Image (tube, rainbow, N blue to C red; front, side, top):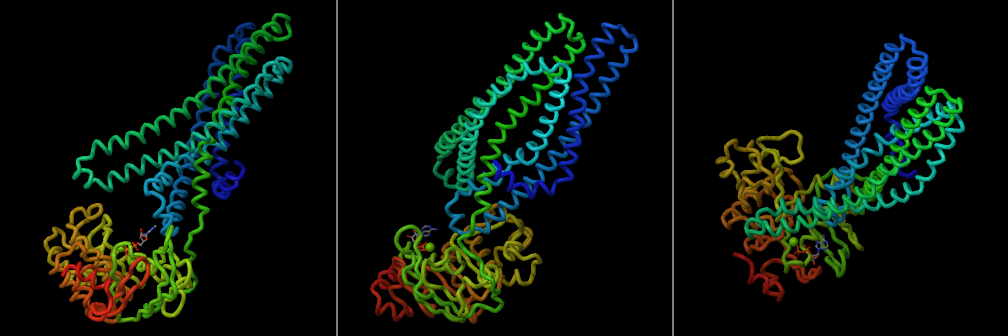
Length: 570
Ligand code: ADP
Ligand code: MG
């Protein structure tokens, strides 16, 4: 707990002024609470016993004044507490997302998107209590308790002592409950991640679910997670809700003691009726903050569990360490030197050696799982080699600032990414100002002009989520246009034309020939027409380059290539 407070401390310090306002509100509440007890004394002694008439209006007016102060205090406290909590939580959401997207691809592959969403939404929300309510609540309740305690002791020390011996009795069960709650809280957060993961999966795979009529099947899978989530939350409720009744019992015990012992004090003339009433009221009021502190203690467990998780992600170091050097000129040379990479077991890339120069057009072929996509992904530093090195323009890729390298690379994958934005913004993805002419030119090279002309608002047509308003081939052409728009010096096509018809692919290829003349192009393809034109073909099998050369050379020398060539689509 200390560690977590330490982590939040810089933020807490920034909100000093707001905390001060909260404390000011709390002080108003404390003063008025103590006054509520104190007003009982004149109510009994002056109004009833001494029958002073003016008390009849003084006391009600006093009571209203006291509650006015209390209400103002409460409002100030609540508003600024929320302000602190909401704004820290909002900032943490940004911090967390910033961290998550900056981490290596491995992190993003391994963690389900639902789990990450759950971290950013649910877990962060649970922290709010910790940073906003906890400190001021504890401060206010301790202050209130101390003020009332002082008042009670001042009224009758002996009676106060007898009532308060009860307090330590509840501390131990409270601690035990808190431990359990923290455990449940962890599990609840896990389950929340499971539920959100199922949801994201269902929505991402909605087509296949509809196509297979598996709505019921998915529903039952969701239902299991959902009710497990319910169960674990209820467990926390069963245990957590014990706190309040325990506190109530303590309250009843305290009151009973006061009535029994205090009643005798009044009979024996050591206490006035007014003092007794004030004492009883003060004890009643005192139990409120004590009970609240107990509740806060159990609520904190939830926030603690969430904070630990969030900080675990914030503390994570990316496996990919960014370089310092800026790559300002175009990529004109790529070298792989003894590059090895294994994901789990076996090598996905096994001792790869390769030189590629500007103007070259390289094709990668091989059975699926051979390591073709991995080869391409290495140039984007999704992973760093286990051993060996990758050089760009003669320098290790690790030396460069990641962003400056990516600036020179365009990639199109088989999976197409369309953002909910206009078509133009999708083509000019990531650019602040959209160059309309450039967009149109890119779409033309990508053989997209014809279908774009049909669109209602042309290049300013909004794309729906994942590009649902386009056909697969149209989406792919948009993705190719995006790659062209960027004017990168290294183009990576990972089965980028798989959804296109032959004619369209040929047109794009022809258009790109001129465009890529001075660039490096690496293409993973299945079509003979694409491969034939390549300056060099690499045959990748089980992570090794088993053959390389032109189409004609390979047809002559490589048995693997002959076999693959038989399967290429023409
Ligand atoms: P290709 O693109 O030639 O079909 P890949 O490069 O995608 O092949 O995959 C090569 C091997 O590495 C395969 O055995 C695949 O299962 C494995 N692999 C690919 N990506 C990952 C990943 N992110 N995590 C773990 N294993 C992976
Ligand atoms: Mg692949």
